[in-house]
Image (cartoon, rainbow, N blue to C red; front, side, top):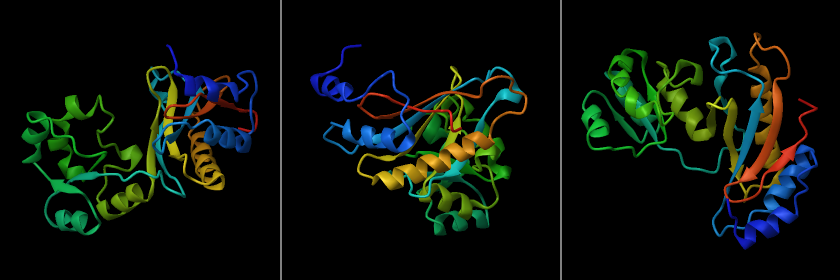
Length: 229
């Protein structure tokens, strides 16, 4: 993959052989952000898990103390009095059965997170082929299948992010924007790592966290020392 001049200049600031402590890594990541827009700061965690085994799966959610810097659009599947509860809590879209053809046939996807009450999962299940591959399927472990829709919405709007293993057993999550102060990125990173460490599957033998890399949307990766975790 060929990188542009800006990326190459930024990459020179990073020593690929060094494992930086978190504070240094965050400072470097901010310094190497060269794009004209406010880049997202992402964390990529390579684990020793084998996601093919159910007992080694990792999936959950954590509220970042300083949010993600992104406005999150929430779609809620609900009925009865839960509809007005969701609307009052600030959901961007609320509906039920009538949204199925809109999503399935018209390709409507103007939302970032889907929340559903348990009694609506039969309806939402029909969208599995559309929402599943995009990682949008509501899940009890992530707190997105719940009767307490108001709390789910306020958590998501406040900066709740979901983490899960991808096919290569890596977790990819945003922890803020490059415009954030270093201390705020540090607080978000610490909150994420605390959740990830707690989520270690008891069935796992061997090393849990293989590597942690911080990077901006367009910038080079900076390796974080995993020893303290």
